Image (tube, rainbow, N blue to C red):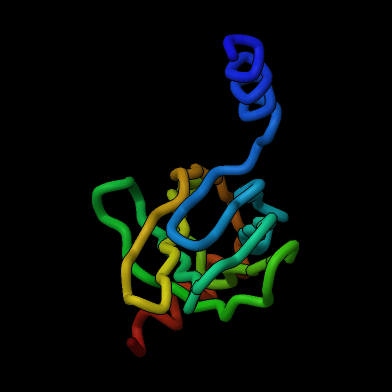
Length: 133
């Protein structure tokens, strides 16, 4: 019996799948391409997932919803381009996924931080857009 527990424990360590609500996330990452921030994640399984909500903020205490993504089904890969991440100077952005299930229960992924320094054109356009919000 002890060997069975050891095998199960070792198996769980090697499975890099984290369960959040009905989603079994394999990975959640982000990077800056110089103009936008690209977020991606993979799922091993999706059970009763209603939607994924991408949350962004300057820190983990001030996050807001920026996009909603519909689930594709188990073993899916997702990519989201955040075209609205810009500031006048180099900045850090904090992201996490909110996973909403069909019972409206919310779970959250790990928090990731992305360093982003957009071009001067992107910063100028972002400032102009902000004036008309």
